[in-house]
Length: 198
Image 1: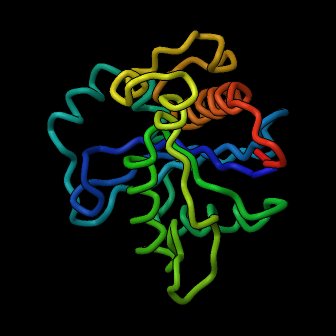
Image 2: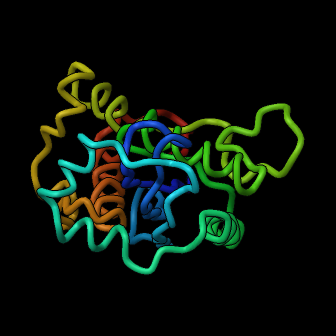
């Protein structure tokens, strides 16, 4: 049964490098059962990067989440090295999952490449593989399983209990736990595939 690492990130703008990854949370889980492991870290802003004004205007409306995302940050290189060590300690190589993977995965891949030399998708390139070479986009899974348009799935039209009692607080680990619970709900609703693992 596939091991997933569900990641949620918080940033101060839309573009890695120009802007900074502030915080991320990760939850290792399978299609069923309690999470196997959790990871959370806050990162120092990148030297030379500047926060994006519209993003900061939004953060001003979320003071508790801002405080959580900026408390006790680590240098980015140390934060990403710790994440790689956490991944290596998992019982098997995981698949990356995000809601949406195009945002969370884009940022994590950029930070992994810059600070650790790893990639989200290793492909044929040199180096150690730390994720399976396929990432799972949770809204796309939801669209397929629930018969939704992808735009509908992005709006998170799910029953509150599908998030496993984890409120969407914009604190990265809280949100990752909620998305992990949602992923398990969606995987449980898939049509049975003969001989296929989750």
